[in-house]
Image 1 (cartoon, rainbow, N blue to C red):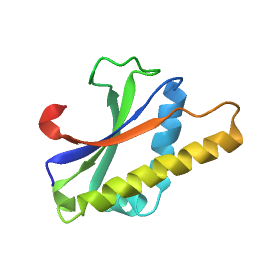
Image 2 (cartoon, one colour; image 1 turned 90 degrees about the horizontal axis):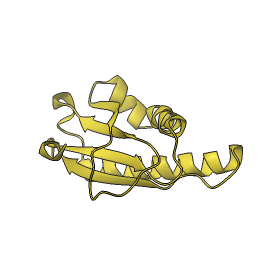
Image 3 (cartoon, one colour; image 1 turned 45 degrees about the vertical axis):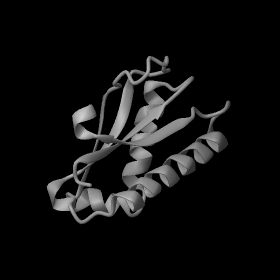
Image 4 (tube, helix red, strand yellow; image 1 turned 45 degrees about the horizontal axis):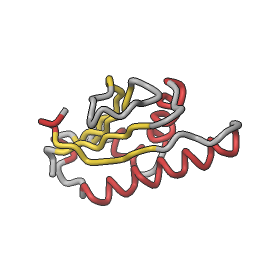
Length: 114
């Protein structure tokens, strides 16, 4: 599954600050942190691709890409770890900021899909 990435998009009232905060959170999550440091994953922000025309609160999305060095990463386990990380970030944000945190969609995407 080395030809797939994981895309994280925040909906609703998400701000650019939310995207950056979530990215920073995920970079510190174990075992994502280990995989990033080992060069097996790359994590970056990019302009959000329009998938279905749904309005978004922000124009950025987060992508986690498995590198060639990470070819042995079990993609389904990685996907679940990312989903857990997004849930943990939302719970933390709920505790430290007013208002409901934005919903996060975590989905695999083929690299050809953008």
